[in-house]
Image 1 (tube, rainbow, N blue to C red):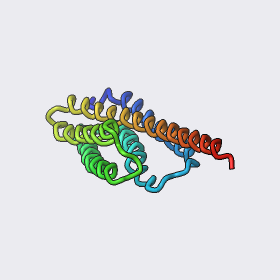
Image 2: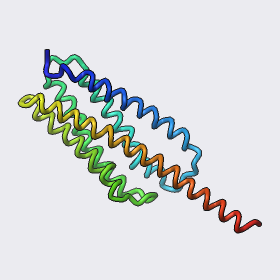
Image 3: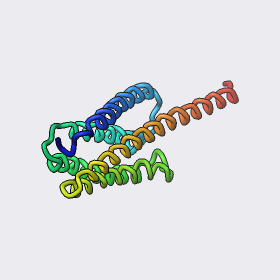
Image 4: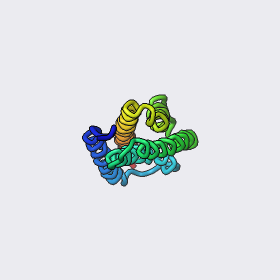
Length: 185
């Protein structure tokens, strides 16, 4: 019995959730595909939409890695450490993308959920990789916490994106209807 034993159910649940949410994101993107896009929308999508899928994918990958039949925690820790380090770099890249896009002015909540929380989650993964051999139990709880941060951050960001598109599109549609009524010719 290894230190990883007992985590299987957790990662089956978390990984399945991440996989299902990735599928739902594809459905949502299909449903909003007909919404007219403004100039620069691709840059905004790269800053706000794509990272949500990447974070869900990271949770799915973590779930697969930690369900593998490792004999020791160190090889698993190396794997999640690489993912964490790559995630830190990606979170920094996303922060730069958020600053450079000009379609949407991010608010404090956007900076927290799209930049800070993912960076913290990936940093936790990276740090937990270095502490795994000395403190395997605590490190595994840190990895679980990082997984949950990424999962709930992705849920928040997906919901935020959907509501933004629904309400901004509805506002534009009502504005166009009001203008058409005031200018009948």
